[in-house]
Image 1: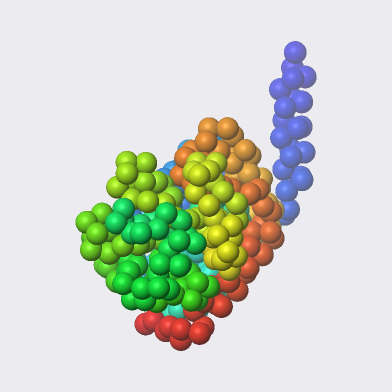
Image 2: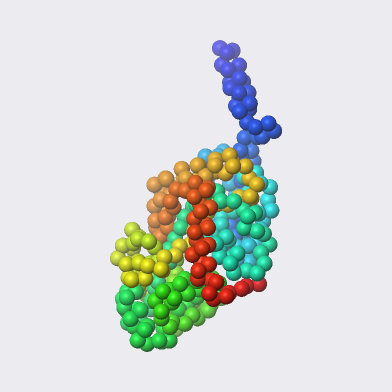
Amino acid sequence: MRLIPRLRTLLAASACLLLPLGAQAYPDRPIRIVVPYAPGGFTDILARTLGTRLSERLGQPVVVENKPGASTMLGADMVAKAAPDGHTLLMATTSTLSTNPLLFRKMPFRSSDLTAVALTGQTPFMLVAHPSVAASDVRGLVAWARAHPGKLNLAMLGVGSSTHLVDEMFRAAAQVNIPDVAYKGSGPATADLLAGHVQLSFDAVATALPRVRAGQLKALGMTSDTRLPLAPEVATFKESGLPQVVAYSWYGLMAPAATPPAVIGQINRVVNEILRLPEVQSQLEASGASAPLLSPKQFAELIDEHTRIWARVIQPLNIQLD
């Protein structure tokens, strides 16, 4: 019977010999996921959903820390300067690496200070309209706007915001005169849209669809490649004759650049296992999101692809922010 404890000791010793000299098994302490937004939004909810399941699989607590501000740059800078050991991760978004480097003259960190770990979701935009708008789809909207230039407005959340950039993508493709009206927050923008003070808005599916279902707004089009299972009745812009209008917000885990590849690979594998879970897939689908299972390299390529897409929108506008 004494052979069993000795066997366990030998197995533990063998496992230690498999690690590089001086290395410890990962993770060996709590993991922190920094969310560069305030609590309660989709990014925060996604981080907490993953964090709970990461903790179960990795055997260490996972703490979500909200660090909003400076268009995600405060939180991103914190992670970029953290120890590169996989214990501090960033729930990054499109703003973090695909648009901020194109918009801001100065950033507190370089894009190369962060490395891709795992894509955790991507969401398209839905174009919604006040019921008074004399169009029920994108084709009808474009026809009406060309016949009545300047008579409609688009609500957007500030210069360089995702809503502003999608507005510009749409206007360039459709060749229509639909000016923007800038708001300081989604609350005032939504209130004015529901009241008919502005007529149109690009919004997240999870936010817009309940108002469409309630009859408060009309859904005109989706910026996804294909129709969403959540709203199969809403045609894409591609179907509506505007194939240039394909846009997503991406969400994903990033780590400090010098994090060991083995640690990045381990987190990627576990995150992809979590994303396969039926309950997680259902939660994403209910938010209008999807999560292709990508390797770190594929995720990095997706970020580069999105950066090129937004560069084609931003550069002709010559937008530079401080």
